[in-house]
Length: 194
Ligand SMILES: N[C@@H](CCC(=O)N[C@@H](CS)C(=O)NCC(=O)O)C(=O)O
Image (cartoon, rainbow, N blue to C red):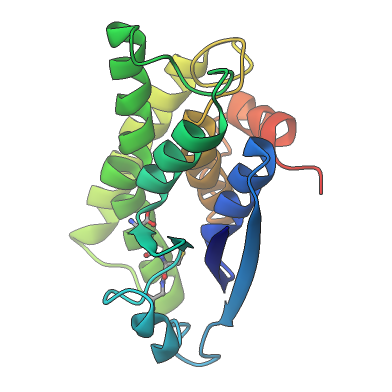
């Protein structure tokens, strides 16, 4: 059985959603952030040296990184390939992998910069314009990819939607979606209902 080491509040709620959609057999081990520093407790480092969440333990296989966890869980549970492309379809698989890696690999960093600047309550002459330009670049790109499709890779929901949904929800919380009404609608369409 999978144990999800789930830190509140953060991206591992999207891993809970993944496990639910995949019909996986799982349990939660819940952790809370330090109220002042907002960092994870040291006990998470006993599970994985980075001490970050999500981390899963599947009968001794310890796996971090939300995109890798999505890939693993769907390979294991989505045998009908309803939420991820069959590896025999090499091009579809490559496009899917690109959109699986993109949120954490490219979109998160400028959002984190923005979040830390808002938390500091100070403008920064270098980081502010850089993060604003990067956020615009990435959310224009996501918005163009989405177009009038319901999901990021077309008309059916896939593993790539979990990471994209997390970035869009974070951007919304940071007040960055005012120019992207379709991304606000996407959020309402794809968020978990439980
Ligand atoms: N790239 C990693 C990021 C993991 C990560 O930074 N998780 C945050 C929670 S949203 C965390 O554990 N932060 C606690 C800390 O750094 O102390 C992934 O995709 O899972």
